[in-house]
Image (cartoon, rainbow, N blue to C red; front, side, top):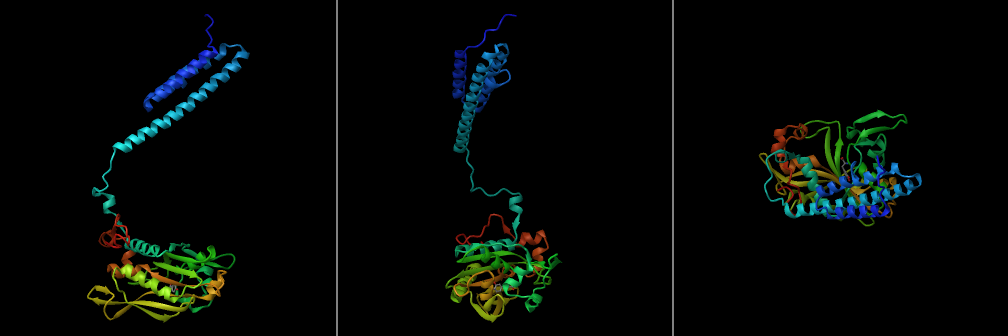
Length: 368
Ligand code: DAH
């Protein structure tokens, strides 16, 4: 076998130029792939060069190997760049030619059959209304410490309000403390104030738990907490916010409200709010008639609660409120039995649920 003719440096330069030109001229991803295989593939031109290494004198081999590796690198980079360019061009072409008509009706199928639960719908409505007034959303855990659920809210041990809450307790912990399933969303007030500097303007919707069950009570239900803290926030603000909320939520111009003196350990003064309504047969009408229905509790945040989170009650004040979401949903959408909310009966959900794309907005109408 005769001695093979070994490639020279100028051969290498020509090869590199050739390949780079092929890459530049590859007009689609397929052509580019063919170019890659012809250059770097097992039987490609660059791989073939590597095979000639074995026939070289050791001192030549090193320099030649380095040159080939350099070409390999340059070619690989050029391939990658061209590939990205071609992919981008292909995508631009698709975007320019393919069109989806988003005005077409939704096809029958899961999306059309599924329903949003009235509680989720009402939560979205409430969020939309308060977001429009500049509130943000706060969250807290459903498994709470005794301390956050009660003590920091000015409900010390042995306080009678603890009994009223029918609390689900978890087993005692080693340090003698115990966790509870939160009985209200009010602990989120504490967590929010601890984690943020005033001014504060939040709502906190979520699940709460009490050991109770009849036509209007279930062991798990939903509340939304509201909290506003600033230097000169007063009861006029509280009243305005709640009135605006009621009008938007019930989608009527005038919802008459009655603020009744009440007692909550974490507010002073405390009030319960009733709205005027009438009932004819099964039909409820909000804003008219001679009956009053309680819908929420509220008040000015108790100075002790502010102290517990390290706020100075001489400088800061504000209001809080707590609303039962399920109760509001029953009122607005005329569902008589709360237990049905959580029975997972698809017929009920089909009847009372909302279509997936009926997202409540103030502009588009909350419930339509
Ligand atoms: N946490 C109270 C409850 O579950 C409701 C409540 C009343 C919340 C007054 C408040 C408030 O924030 O100010 O019965």
